[in-house]
Length: 188
Figure (cartoon, rainbow, N blue to C red):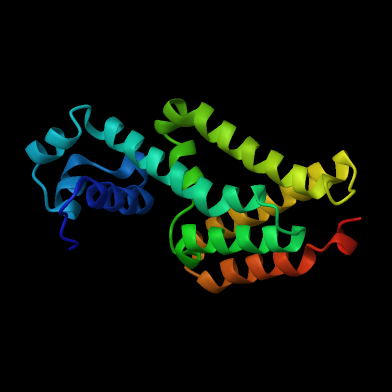
């Protein structure tokens, strides 16, 4: 068990728990067992209970996703480097495919109503960021939209497949395939 010495450690542990069990499958008993904290301690840090914990988790993963995945797309680097850096960020964010798809964790079950708008906005921002850098390479909007959706669907689909099968190498193959497919010449 990880020793929790700070609020940040606690939120990091909550991320692992929600990824493993999903929001609906995570009970206070599981939270207490996995964090090593009693219910009173959990409520001390999160008076709003499990929903407040989920909000803290969502805020942390949103910051991490922005830093690792979205920020590389907004740099002044060349197209290939932006895509490469985004894919490296995806790999770090999802721990080589071992971390569950967090969109999946928060987009289904009872949290879909809580996080629907945030998840939709994040997905659209990712898509729009990809569209922009693809269009900057001279690709028309319709093609840029299709390519950006294909990239995101491939990544998210690979995460779901990995979760279902435990085949982490398939996630890494998907990222390599995207990187190899994406060049200015193959975009047209």
